[in-house]
Length: 133
Image: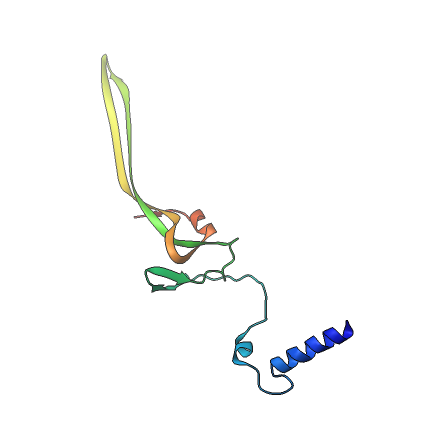
C-alpha cells in the first residue's frame, strides 16, 4: 500500500512539473481556492448581451437582503377621492339643506421591486413611503 501511494505521489509531482520542469498551463490556470461570505451594496448588477441572452453575475449579493433580476422603482398610480356631506339648518320655520363636496386627485408612486434582468432590489425597498407627485 505504501509503495502504491508513493508511486502515485511521485507520478503526480513529475506530471505537474514540480520536480522536473515548469507547471503545465492548464494547472497554472486552475483555481483551488474556495470561500464564502456576504456582501452589501447599493448599486445594481450589470451584464452584457450575447446572442440575445443576458449574462450577469449576481451571486455576490446576499439573497437574504436582495432579490435578483429585479430593480427598485416607484410604480405610479392615479388616485381620486371625494367627500360629500350635507346637513340641515333651520332658520326660523324654514328648513335649509346645505351641502359640501370636496374632490382631490393626484398621482402616487408606490415602491416596488419590478422584474429587470441583471439587476438587484433591496427587499426593504418596498417598505419606503410612497412618493406623491
